[in-house]
Image (cartoon, rainbow, N blue to C red; front, side):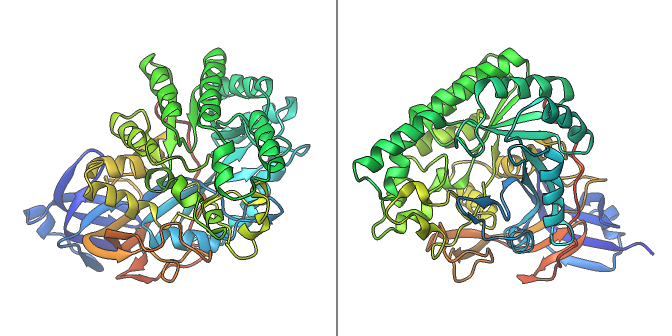
Length: 466
């Protein structure tokens, strides 16, 4: 017996199209689309019929930058794969790609297996992994080839965090050279960590200990310099480059210049850089600690450049860098020393709604919303058209989205396992109504109907822009 679901009467919005269409789902995949009211659509029968009148029917969000259960700074991210993927589903995201971490001196395989074990049987939605390479050597370079074959086709390196994740230029070059041969995509945290550490030490010596100084020492120019350097190293290696969490106008300019030369260089930004600023970092009574992340929040004037980059396609993806730490007991570790505040913000539940608000406010159009949040991330990381679109044969990861519903973002009502919201009190127009993951209702009429273990591992191919 096949299992059929019919979504009737909605406006189907993908990166390529907007059409009033009914969607037929069979055995977890999209079987067909037909114009609403057409003879073809009228003839369809199904076990389950969902009325999408007045709603958008959109692909499930694809968030390619999350950190569930990440150990960091003497503590660990507060969302587990179970709580984090449930929250993602509430926000209309149906696929995440998280980061497995190599420990220095240990094989990539050991780190990857640790993350498989964390996620297996616990996820409400589908998931994949990138590999953080903390220790570039002959052995790990060989392992990169095997991981690409295994569907782990992207590798993150850090120009920041000396003594933790940092790689020097020689190690970065070697990893990029390997990626140029095995088809992997190098993801780069581009900040000059060596220089930043000097500025941190000097700031603390002057008694500048408050959260706002976190943003002040992580200079815009040190993000731009590292972005420039990463691009040049990638050119030397003949490798593609994906720069994560771009926050500054000057860094966008480096990416735009590289893309104008036709280089395979890509950029991601995050909602926090589009909607928050150094004003938040400067909130009194240590409240600014809630907003400590790296790259840091920037002065508000950088936001216009980021929106422009998203419109001109100099930035292609909006991910969350979801890495939540509770204010009480975790962010508070940095009272009296901003450098000890765990770096990261919660956001996996808010991304699709915040970007819809950007549509409402005229920053981007509806199809661009779906492009930067669903289709491009899926293509960038080898999951399209299985993920990121609504087309015959695609996984039935589909969201019924009410574009007129109003909501107020709050820690009281969110589902992330963290005691504050980075967007507390923000009024948004638009809200998720129903979410299907491979045809199964995970959120139905604003109720969670999913389960831990429904989500499966996604074996990714290589970047589809190369």
